[in-house]
Amino acid sequence: MRKVNLKESFAQFSDRWSPKIVGDINDEYVKLAKLSGKFDWHHHEHEDELFLVISGRLRMGLRTGDIDLDAGEFIIVPKGTEHCPEALTEECCVVLLEPKSTLNTGNIVNERTVHELDKL
Image 1 (cartoon, rainbow, N blue to C red):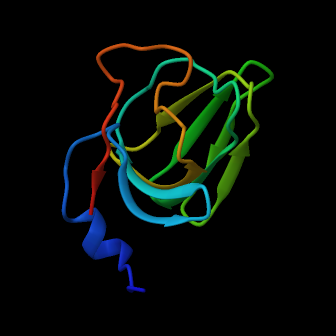
Image 2 (cartoon, one colour):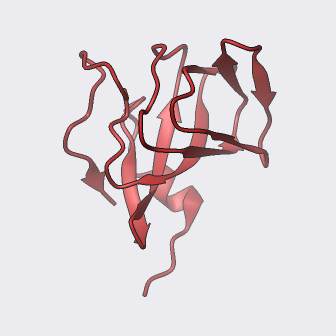
């Protein structure tokens, strides 16, 4: 067991849209990510995702209407739901809780796809 300090962990990296593993629980990873700008529309066929905003603001683009989140708020995106995360501030720091099988770009593979996640 180890204690994870979110402030210290976020300070260890600067790259955007590249989740870092900070823990695992059962078949899930706890990940940290820094977001900037708009991501790509995608979905995850078999995985739900939790986005917890630690700092900044996040807009979760959904085909049914966008949802804006502030620090201290979270959203769960159900599997199969097309979504497009967007940082509404210069930088948005989030904690992600996702199954270990989750690919950050879901059903698409492009230059933002991270196949091997770094561990902090």
